[in-house]
Image (tube, rainbow, N blue to C red; front, side, top):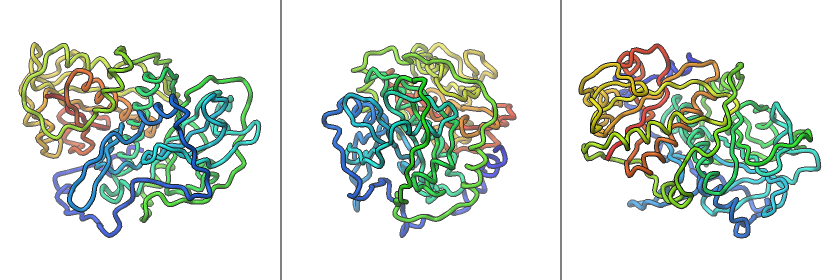
Amino acid sequence: MNDYHLQTIHTRESVRSGRSLDWQHQPEVFKCYPPKYDDVSLAGCLQIRDFLYLSCGITAAKVYPGGRYFLRANPSAGALYPCELYVQSRNEPELADGIYHFEPLTQRLRLLHVPEPGEGLEGYLRQQDMVDGLVVLVTAIYYRSSWKYGQRALRYCLLDGGHILGAMEAAACCTDRSCSWVTRFDRQGLQRDFGFSTRELPLAMGISGRRCSDQIRRPRMELEYVDGSGFFCRDSVIEQAFTRASSLSDCRRGQYAGRPYSVTKTELKSTILRRRSIREFSGRPVSLARYRAVRDMIGRKVAIDCDEDIQVFSVVHRVVGLESGLYVDDRCLRKGNFAARAEYLCLEQPLGGDGAATFFLVGDSENYLALMLKAGLLGQRIYLASGLQGLGCSGIGAFYDLEVANFLETGNLILYALAIGI
């Protein structure tokens, strides 16, 4: 998978190559199943409604000449939102047993299949133990991203999927639910049964419920293909890279994360609803306590079945009480004012150098899918931790990959960058 990551690096030449957008085939950002699938209201399912809404619901709309676009609880590269959510309910007091698709635009569900006794989404997992509660499937319709970003789009789909996992983590805190994530399951079987073909990529499953000893088999369903982008252009590089990424090697299981946010549910929910990607920093400094509150949030445990190591480099620009320089954790690697360098590395975007600090998430593993999902999850934590401290945050998925690696003096992959500040 290093081959795919290196194949999709940005250089000064690549970002000036003049890739144009096909506005005639701009993708839709909402997938809607036809009326033959029952429409299910969540009005009587307040806890489940809030859990799904805080995971990926619409929190604002922006109107511009000729149209509008929607902002959600989870950020997305280019506001293209490639990810979809499917939910299985089992023995939930508020919602009948079934496999559903969640529609963010309407905050409603579409019932896709009623499982027979002994079958369900758990049948795709390596450990097929029954889950009393919710099983959430996160997928990505990759053309929504590849329309703009080309072959690099798989990176953004995985980071966006990770952001949803991080949003689910926060939503679980707000709704008193448990939450853990699974990256190892039968993706090909799931793609066939859901009718996704290779156009919609199953990224991860979330478990919010109690595991039981009963074993579950795959559901006997053959759903029709439902278009989720309005147009589709196949990219064999993305599909082949995803197939390779789906074959996970052995890895460390993450530990139970507990409640990663220590603030009140009201405060956390308010932060989720206010979350935005900041467009411009003021250049004012922030306190060391606020910076560390964000930095410490990154290192908390992650309840995922494949927990890959990610190293977080921090280029500190404007933190009171902390000398400017390049850091790993609290260890200073090099002192100096690197704001202009960080700006250049982030494709010469002022966001990279005008804030208080710029984080670079770095890692390397054969388990590329799990690695990138975790990077997105940590990115969501940075967003919310920044918001809780009254700071702004912007995720930066585009950077000069090899030049960042040279600056950090690392041979590993550059996964993600995020800038924080006022």
